[in-house]
Amino acid sequence: METSKILVDADVIIHLYKCDQLSLLQQLFPKRILILDVVYSELIKNPTINTHIQNLITFKQAQLIDFPTNDFDILKEYNQLKRSKGLGESACMAVCRFQKNILASSNMRDIGPYCRTHSIKYLTTMDIFAIAYKKGLLTVAECDHSIYQIKSKGSNLIKAIDRIEDYFIDDFEDEKLTY
Image 1: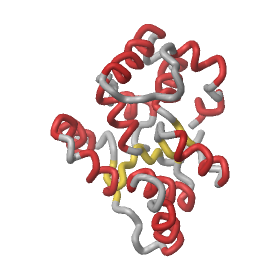
Image 2: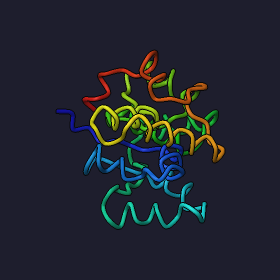
Image 3: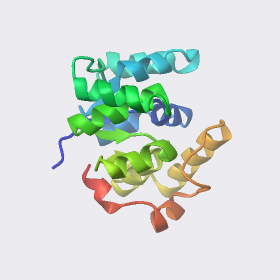
């Protein structure tokens, strides 16, 4: 059984918030969800999600952790990455590279090549829905409705996929069920 921590970037939290499925993180990965202070700072700027983020931490559904500024390798990697990527994504990628955490982010354009190059395991919002479906926490209809809600509220998910069944055809990797 995999015991790596799941380091969650802001986009995944925002997606799950928009479809009222934030509880999936705790249900799927109990006591394994980490939020870096850099990501937390991005999230609390949004007044509509602020209380929900506070609740995740207060009720120990996620653990807020400091960016490891005392680790030279992580700091160097972060400074390199943030030149071309967002601060939260850069921080998450740098930490996951050197601490062997699993990255949860849906910005595949930025994280995909990096994760493949450095053998970092990752989950997207769509992966989280797929895992929730495979584990019986969501039905196909609930997954599809969640995807619809996220998109209708102005967020992008992977490709132009509107149905979880379409995601299973070409994109979902069964290995992620063991994360």
